[in-house]
Every structure is written in structure tokens, then in C-alpha cells.
Image 1 (cartoon, one colour):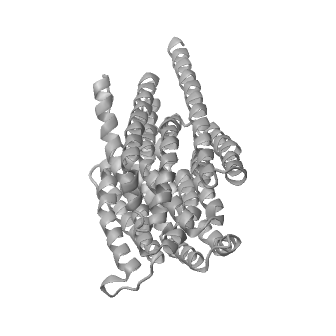
Image 2 (image 1 turned 60 degrees about the vertical axis):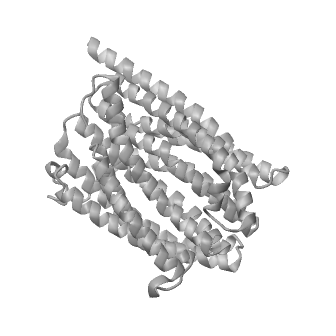
Image 3 (image 1 turned 135 degrees about the vertical axis):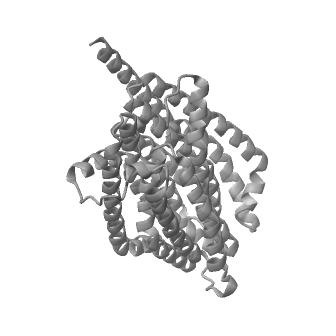
Length: 456
């Protein structure tokens, strides 16, 4: 990254950082897309089972990944402040933290997965697919969390093209493994939806190894000497990582868990409804990669400018990012209105699933517009290291307002399963307003602080 003096230079740097992140996120999302899509073509029961498994796993994955993403604003601010010698120390500490979190998740899974699935009273086939999908995914937890740290380190330096290439390499591998393990081609076992979990876990090991070699030997990262010294666990570094990361993790967890909670609540409906809901939610999650990528780019750029004490530049990047996300959301909304049926057919050949998926996609249009405001705004706040209020606002918007509204509409009105989606729309809209309000307060604080410093 470098100092930018004009709006044109800022746009160039913004897209230089953003586009590789977007491609990376789309590729990572495509793994879940192909898991869902290819399982759906195996059978509706496998699609529903994978849907339940993904709904239980994604909040845990994204929440804990959020904790590890604390390394991004830490490294970006260290680089902006010209303290590059401290980078490797923090990266190693984050890797230790990722290992401990992985072990805790594995232990928790041993005791919790079966009781949770048993409480849902699923059809036997759906239950078995969900259980063994999660069992297979467990083998990929350690490499996934380690990769999150290595990726966040590389992205924080503005070298987002490297993580893009790593992910693009891994995507065809994941698709190939799905092809072999879901359908039993080329002599491999025919595992159905369970095979998609095994394929994804194997892919996580591959991307971790590639990322580790790149961070160690890549020319762009050699000066940081990440693995030149393996530091022991340091309480002070963990305290900073947790102080920044836990609020980020909770905010992401509350946001992703609300969608998973809706899917789990909808397990009381029939298999066709669950499958259609998951198909629409999966595609909406793919579209969510647009604002999420902008969010991650803003964390890097705002963090860099804040570390260099350039509050006006940080504010300019925030406006650019949020404006871009809103514009893109309007374009994708029009696309869904025109090609909703074609999107639904990507996930299933069952006429009932296709029809219901189309209906759910209409609701997805509305909450993705709110996402376009809320998500990039959170990225800017993370760049300022302002993370504690964000997770409280997320909890209020999604769990205090969004989920109760959806539950009431689904249970006691004629909206049925669509009521949950209306609740999601309500929560996301409230969150967008609150996050924007918080960002304006933070920017005003940094401007006043800078003016006071200059006056002194």
C-alpha cells in the first residue's frame, strides 16, 4: 500500500485491494455453493442434510474466523506506523491462538453435535447426512483457522492477489473432490452430501499448505520473516488479539447465526421447504460476498490510513466503499428479478423446490440492500479498531429485533416460512442505520483528536 494524494489514486488503490479479495471470497463461497448444489442434485434429502450441517457449522466458523481476523487491523496499523519489525511476532501469536480455538471446537463438537441434531427431530436420512457432513468437516478445522491467519496477514499488507491465486487454485480441486466423493465416480465411494464435507476438509489442508509456503518464501513477504523465529505463547499479545478479535467474532457470529437459526427453525417444515430455503439462502450468501469483500478492503485501507494519522483519507475510503456496495446491490437486485427462475434451477430439478426457491429469492433482494450498507460500515469501524459497540449493535438488530419479528410472523400469521425472511429484512435494516450512526461518531472523534494534536 502507498500514500494516495488524489481521488483517482484512491479509487485505483481501492480496486487494487478489493478485486482480489472479491475473487477470493467468491471462490471460497463457491465451495459452499458447489457443496449445496451438487448435493441437491444427488437428492432433496442430501440437500436438506447439508443445509442443516452448514447452518450449524457456518456461525462457528465465521465467528471464530472473526476473532483471528483481528490480525488484519493490527498488521495494517503497524505497517502504516512503520513498525514492520513487530509483524511476525503478532502473526505467530495468532497462529497459536488458531490452534487452541481449533482444539476447543473439536472437543465441543464431540459432545454437542448429536444432542443438537436429535433435538431437531429430522427425517432419518437428513439427520445422517447432517451428522456425517459435520464429522467430515471436522478434519479441516485446524488448517482452515491457520489459513485465516495467514490470509489476513497477507491481505493486511495489501497483497490480496496472493490469497486470490491460492483460493482459485483450490476451487477446481474442491469441485473435483465433490465430483468423486458425492457421486462415487472413478471408483471412489458414493457418499452423497457427506462427500461434500470430506472434499471441503481436504481442500482446507491444501490451501493452508500453499499459504504457509507463500508467506514464508514469497518475495513480497520475505522482509517480515514470519517463520524465522517461533515465539512462545505471550499473554500480552493474546490479550490484544482477543480484545480486538472477540468483538469482531461475536459481531460476525450474531450476523451469520441469525441466518442459521432461521434455517434450524424451519426444520419444522417439510424437506422441500428446507431445501428451497437453503438454495435461496446459499445464493444470497454468494451475493453477500460483494459487501463482505468491500468490508475487508475497508478494514485494510482505513486501518492503514488511521495508523498513518490521515483521518480525512480514512473517511474518504469509507464513503467510497459504502457507496460502491449500495450501487452493486441495486444491480444484483435487478438481476434476481429478471433471472430468479434460472437461479432456482441451479440448485434442483424438483419443480416444487424450484418454485419455492424463486419466492424466497424475492425476499433476498431486500435484505441484501441493507447488507450493502451495514457490512462495509463494519469494515470501516474495524479499521479504526472500534469493535466493541459493533457487536452490541449486531446483537440488538438481529437477535432482539430481527429474529423475534420473524418468529412471530412465521408462527402466528399467514406468512408461514416467509415470515422469517421478513424478520431478517427488518433486523438488517435496523443494523444498517445503527452502524452508519456509529461510524459518523467515530470519524468525528478521530477528526477532533487530530485537530487537537495539531493545535498542541
